[in-house]
Amino acid sequence: MAGNTWEKRQREKARRERKELKRSKRDEKREAGEEDVDGPTNEELMEQFAALNKEKAAGEIDEAAFQLRRNEIWLAMGLPVD
Image (cartoon, rainbow, N blue to C red):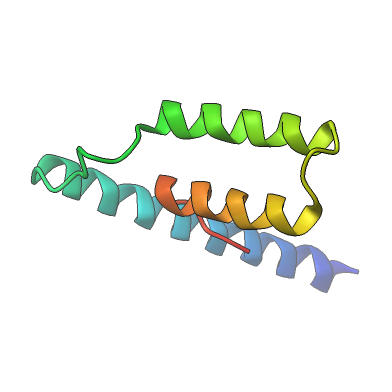
């Protein structure tokens, strides 16, 4: 049982480190002026994601369409995709 706890902590630590690395890379790009000013902002992307969730909850789109669009939004935000 103790091995499972240790493994879980290691996975969580690795996940936090990857997240911090991505955050620092985004910050470096932003400071260097390399941010994509033509694309939607994170706030706009979050609004799109909220609308997408409402469509799925209402049964307007199927799971495959939801996953595809969700991954597109997450990629645009710089988040990891399944």
